[in-house]
Length: 303
Image (cartoon, rainbow, N blue to C red; front, side):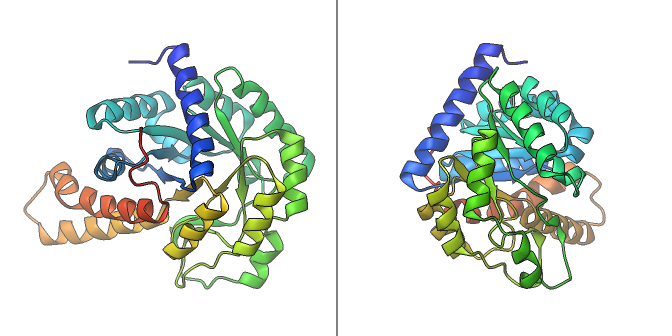
């Protein structure tokens, strides 16, 4: 059942208040990407068990597969069924038009990222697109997230080493972050401090000193994309600094696929994939989500 405009606005207002509370109390929302209903169920079970508030998010690929309205309905149904605090984020929305569709669908969080579709997008193009989405989002009160340039990596299992000398060239700077936030009036700044999309052969290393300087430089919220493959102690420090949103995708995808492949091999006579997903895959992904929530200090914080 579709939400009314007032319900959407109430949800967005609550999400905004809760993000401010997370910053004050030094915990962060885990933002977990959805591939299907099994992933959604895993996140819901983890949130319920740990009494933790969560975000679930979809990128354009999942939107094309499931549809914005279907995602909104699935999340609302799961919230009621499990009695949990859950919001929806449109992750890496590649255009202003796509972001507006997410706002119209009642998503509480919108990430506009035109540089994802066009790595060569100019500063002026990125700022103009972000400003347009921020203005449009005022209709529902949705929170808008963005960044001033392309963020590296992809949500997959990578075999190459991390070239930190190269990626440091794309790190956020306090001056650049402040200028971007002032130019766009965004609610959340997606920081680049060593975090990369995807899972790599070696653990990621975050520049916490730079993260603190970013926190001191800008008034809005700060998110960390590319949280997979990052040792938990970095997140424990990041939430103390003031990060309020951490994105997780590849860690879930890798466990999902590895568990499914093993389960299918171990059960050659079982053709009910749904049964196998619920018995094995959902629980494996749930364990990943629970581990992340513990490092985000969000257990017991749901309302």
